[in-house]
Image 1 (cartoon, helix red, strand yellow):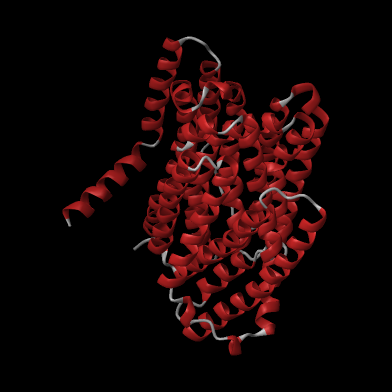
Image 2 (tube, one colour; image 1 turned 45 degrees about the vertical axis):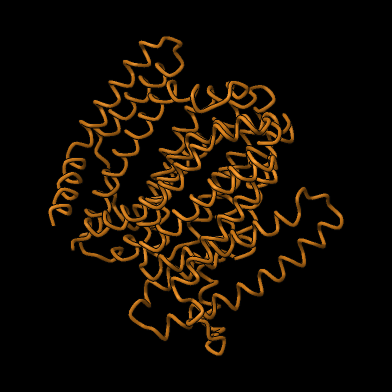
Length: 468
């Protein structure tokens, strides 16, 4: 199987699992916006935001290291067992220390739902770790099944806890924790990790090497947290939890694209690592970059064309203000596609410090714009700070990455992308139904025309699979 087909196969398998999870989460929006007030939704969003901050600090991003090292050890059972044993040894110590510190802090700081939040963080650490192990083993199907189980658990537990038991914010957090627990349990059993844990194989020299790779990713993870969600902290601090609830709903639509970017990133990280020293590397990487950007530009423009029709159906009227802040956040996700593509090239070259330094730059830009303009521009400042930070990171990495890989974009693609976004954003803010309809038709035609070869190839591949 050639490189591009292998990359496509991996992406499709992961896509199947992840899309199910994200669509389920998206279709729960009517439930959340109907049963939770803006303030309650803002509190839950802020809690989950801080959960995402603590996870890379607790693990020191060891899960990213074990994924990278497992790829190199797929044909060596002894090395695999050594890596898994090292991983669980450190994971046990990290979670024990976190537990002690968390409950000491809880004695002095009033944490809402402390026990539930502690469980949520612990199972987030475990599920994130086991998912990376599955990828390191090349078990993309198991990865996808675990994501589907996460989605199903989320739906069932949310309906029971929020609708039936009226637990509101606490019920939503419990649902997240339960979903991650089911994911962790499935992978622990399916990957037979219990058979690979042998603490006598713990190798401190290997651990040091793994941490040399992963620790520079900690500031990177924190910086990504700042770029992505520091807005919520600043909004809550200056404008209150209700405003944060409104902004969180604005983010739900772009999050669909971000999730798809994450799916691309998962399969791309493996392909980039496997092909970074290939003789036809530049051609392969440029081909993937152009194909992916065409798809995501069409997807982002399509989302902006669909939102005027979908928003009133999906979102309760008390959240109507969220509509205005979506376009800059959607544009930010397009720049993020390029950022992620370049990030995996750095990691394939084991240049994790480069990833961290460029992300820190974006985080600083994001915070500065927020602090300087949020009082004057309100939630627009948060949305535009994210977009500008992503844009600058994308441009910087594009030119810096040329030291290692020469990625070339189709200039016509860039021109067409700018034109279609100007057009659809103008349509988006129009109040006229017929303009929204015209915008949708134009974007659909654009998406088909720009991705014709990819769509035709995908159709033929699926048709041939069915025939077999």
